[in-house]
Length: 415
Image (cartoon, rainbow, N blue to C red):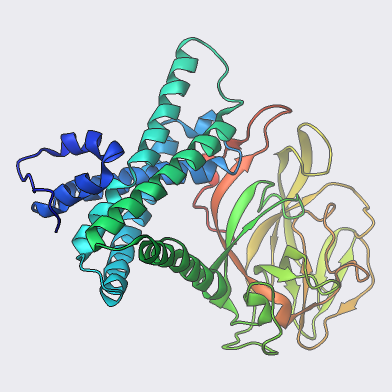
C-alpha cells in the first residue's frame, strides 16, 4: 500500500500510542495484518457509549448519569447503534471510495473509523476520573458536569474527526479534497438522510415542556411520536412544506389516543393532547366530568397525586387524581387542580367532519380544544403522530442544580 513496511507482529497496544502522532502510518500497519474484528467492535462499542453520554449531557443531566445504570444504558444502547452505524458507514464509504478511485476494503474503512474513536473514549475516561476524584474528596462535582461533558466531548470529537480524515485518506490513497467529500458524505450526509427518513416516516422525538398532560406525561419527559400511525400529511415533513394536501396512507385515530399536532391557529406550535371526540361527537364538561354524546365518561377517584409542576405552583402539591375510562375501553389518569375551574362547565362542542376534539389529562391546567379561541377543533391533517414511548426523562433540579434522571420512566409505553 505504501513504502511503510507492515509489521504483522506489532501488538495492538503499540497502536494505542502511535495512533496519536502517526495515525496514517499506524492505520496502514493495522490494515496490513489480519483483521482484528474483536478490537474493532470493542472500540465501536466504547466510542458509542462515550457519544451517548455526551448526547445525554445536552439534556442537562448531572452526576446521576455517571453511575452503573447510566453507564450500562449508554454502553448497551450507544454501543449497539455505534456498531450498526460502523458497518453501514464502512460499507457505503468503501463503495463510494471505489467509484472515486480508492482501493480500501470495507474492513479497512471500519478499522479507520473504529480507531478514530479513541479521542472520544479518552475524553469520557478523563471525565469519569475527574468525577471519581471529586467524589472521593467530597467536592460537589455535580454542578459543572453537563457543561464539562459537552466541552470535552466537543473538543475530543473534533480530534476524532481529524484522525478519521487522516486514516481514511491513507487507506483509500486519496488526496485531501476527495477525503473531505467521502468523509462528509458518510459522516454527515448519510446520518442526516437516515435521521431525516426516520423523523419523517417513522418516529419523531418531542420534549414535554408543560404540565398539561400530567400525570401521563411529566415536565422533562422526552417521547417518540409514531409518524405512520395515521398516515402522512405535510406536517409529517420538516418545516411542513405545502407539497400536497390531505393525508397519504391515512387511517383514523381512536378515542383516547394521545397525539401531537400542529396548532391550527399558527401552524408552527406543537401540542400534545388526548383525543376525546371524533367527527360528529358531542363533547361537554359538567362539574369537571367529561360527557361524550350526552353520556358521562366513567370516572373513579384514586389516590391523590403528589409532585411538582402539576398546578403551576412551586414545591410539592397534592392534587385530586382520577382514573377515566372512555366508551371504547381506553383508560388513563387525570388530575383536577381546581374545583369548579373555568372549563369544568362548558357548552356542548359538536366536532366537525375531518376534525378531532382534544383535552389535556391535567384538566385544570391545560389549554386545549375547550378553548376555541386558542386551540379549538383539530383538523385531522394537523396531527403529526401518536405518542408512543418515553425514551428519556429528566426532572428539573433545584436552582443551581443539574437535572436528575427519572430512570423508572425510560422505556415506558404511553397510553
